[in-house]
Each structure stands twice: as structure tokens, then as C-alpha cells.
Amino acid sequence: MTQPDTRPALEALRAQISRLEGRSGRERAVLPFGVGEIDRRLPGGGLALGALHEVAGGGADALHCAAAGQFAAGIAARATGKVLWIVTRADLFAPALQQAGLSSARVIFVEAGTDRDGLACFEEGLRHGGPGAVVADVARLTMPASRRLQLAAETSGALGIAIRRWRRQADAADFGQPTAAVTRWRVSVLPSGPLPVPGVGRGRWLLELMRARAGESAAFEVEACDERGRLALPGAADRLAVPAALGDRPGAAASGRGRASA
Image 1 (cartoon, rainbow, N blue to C red):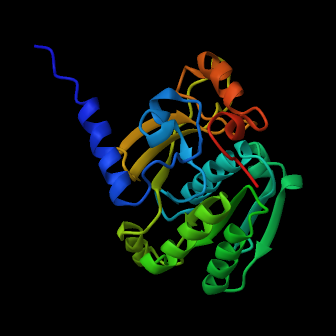
Image 2 (image 1 turned 180 degrees about the vertical axis):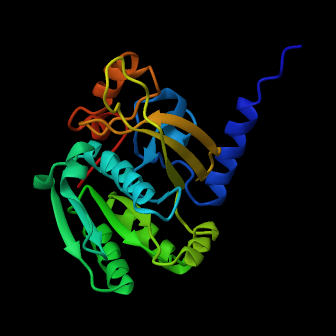
Image 3 (image 1 turned 90 degrees about the vertical axis):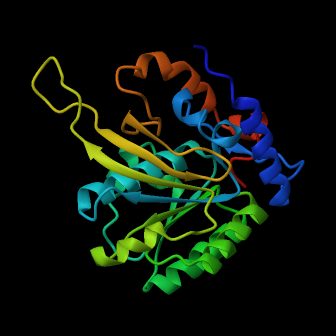
């Protein structure tokens, strides 16, 4: 038996939520991933610019935290303009960012002494409007603090990515608390795909979209960011290369769907 198409009802519900949130009639610019299965789950067909997003590793160990950082780097790499990257621990490995497509020549690194200073830099960076993307290590993120970050991002149009990191596993429960972030992601490391010759293949992640404002939660098995910051579905890298490349052209997001950087 054919199931009824519920998309019109979902679109109407999303429009009603947008009106209630005061966003009626205002199209939010987006940065597509270039992977249809992911973009279709996101309102507008991509990651909202001028908005705050949260990313965390699937575990508290360095491996999963590094995957979350590379996921954020891949997104920042596909935005245009400079990237402000704020850390609270001096363990950021620049070659790993390069591997995800983010050249250190584009990045302004800031080392904040405390979590509180890091949040302050994050907010100022988003409000400034110069960087196209601002990425920051964030431990505790309260609703008032996330609202300030979201408003700052909306004001400048910059993309804000909070990489949630905790010094103690017990603090990770904070990740389940409500915030004003538009999306919330969790990245877990999976075994890489087999190769026809001895060696290590391209990394794979379980990418969980845990929350999307006016969107749906979902989970994807993806191949890790390549040297241009692009994701791909396992075995579909060649098929997706053309649309991903089109979405990554300098200024493509700005001319097609909105602003990608200041």
C-alpha cells in the first residue's frame, strides 16, 4: 500500500515554526555539504550560515575528539574568507586541519587561557564580521551563552562552530542540555574501508545529526573530509565529486544561496 506523502505537511509545519521564531520571510543562507542524503535533512538544503552549530566526538578520547575537529575543519574549509579558531588547550594539530582542506594560511589561531575567555573570544569573533567562520573549543554552554553566540552570528552572517570538549567525562552530560544552536552533530570513528592493496583507506565516520532546528535527526555513515573538506558516502565519492565541486566554488554559497563569509 502506498504511503501518503507527508512532505507538504512538514513544510507547512516548518513555515509555522519559522513564523513563531520571527524568521518569516527571511531566507537563511546555507552551505551545502554536497551530499544529497545529508543536505535533504537540513532546512534550506545545507548548513545554515549566520548561525551557531555544535559538534562533539562520539567519545571522550582523543581519536573521537580529533574526528570532531576535522569535521569542523572541513566545514570551515568550504566557507570563504578567514577562519578564527579558538582553543583552550594547546593540542590543535595544524596538519590535521590541512588534511581536511583547511590551510593554516587561512586560519587565525587564538589560545584562550580559560573556558570563560574562550567563550568571550568566540562571541567577539562572531560579532566582528571579518572571519567567514569562527570555530571554538567549548566546554559548558548554557542557554544564555548560546543565545548570545547565535545572535552574534546572525548579526555578522559568520558561521559559528562550537566543538564541545570536556576535561572530565562526567561533564559530557552538558551536551544533552538545550541550547540555541541550530544544529548539533556527533562524530564517531569507524574502521576505514578495505583497500585492494595493503594500507589504510580513507577514514570513515558515523555522523549523527542529533538536532536540527525545523529539521529531522538522522545518522549517516560517511567517508571523512578529503583535501577540499568534502564528505562522501562510502563508495559514492566519484559520483558526488561534481556536485560537491560546484558547491565549493569560491563565492558559490554567496551567489547561489547566500553569504559564506564576511
